[in-house]
Image (cartoon, rainbow, N blue to C red):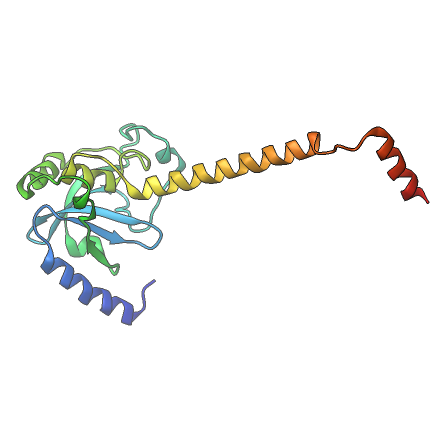
Length: 193
């Protein structure tokens, strides 16, 4: 939980961010270990994919929502319009259009139109259809999540590392002993003395 000084600092920071936003900008709300995302549409409003019982502030993630392909079966979240201050809480927010240097953003009016057309749509999947996927789709036409990509890459690297260690261990155990039978018997005799 943020201290009083930290909340005040975030409040001033967020006022500055809000003044800097233009229609169609992506807004990232830092929640600690993850970020919540939305699209700024003007008048201090954000359109975002939010949980009906949990807007993502406390990351109430359940196992069945992680592996769903579209999330429609669970109807965990829907696209909605909310005030910036309602979403940000005491956390810091950032204008985050960093993909503009790699992907071509739609014009601001098209980003807003994309977001508005999805208001009320239900569906959620942590891996394939989360708030970051939604926001980036609105701006770039690409449903991508750097947060998910980072976690998936980390898991893949960890699994590859474990596989390599397992193979090295197996190789060493089964083929690493080059002693002949006579050398092993001689070693055993020395140990007995």
